[in-house]
Image (cartoon, rainbow, N blue to C red):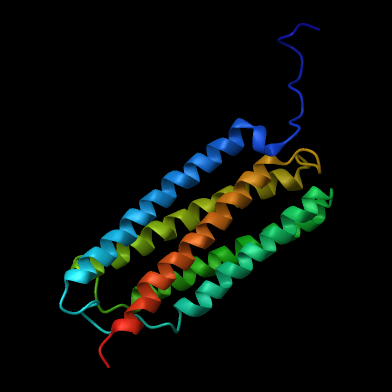
Length: 198
């Protein structure tokens, strides 16, 4: 067998693989994007006479949505730990639950958008609110596509306890999306209630 025809060796550690480092670099880049957006939100808010210009955002939908996303992270962690033990069925089940929870999160986010009495062009606050939450919405949607692709591969038996780098990378990305939402939720939904005049 020629050197070109030989199969590549199995990775001994996921952290040594280029794909893992690629995901870490992607997360770092996207984290910077959200950091800039949140900085813009607080910078413009600090100069405004009243921020937000309307009432603080309600927590009626946002708080349950936050819990849903946190639970989705827990189910995916449970699923990934199952794959590490060679329990493919556990991964398939946990990832399926995560996908459903992610879809529910996006549906509730759209429901909240529909109930807003302002839009992205109404004022600076509206522009930042829809830009920040919209970017996060897009990241969740991308995460769901990644999860769906890995789910299909898991059903087809492409992964094992020793070989599941794609699962590891997708799980990292999903946890990143959850952490970003916590920052967005605190910044856009909680802090306005702290400084809003009573």
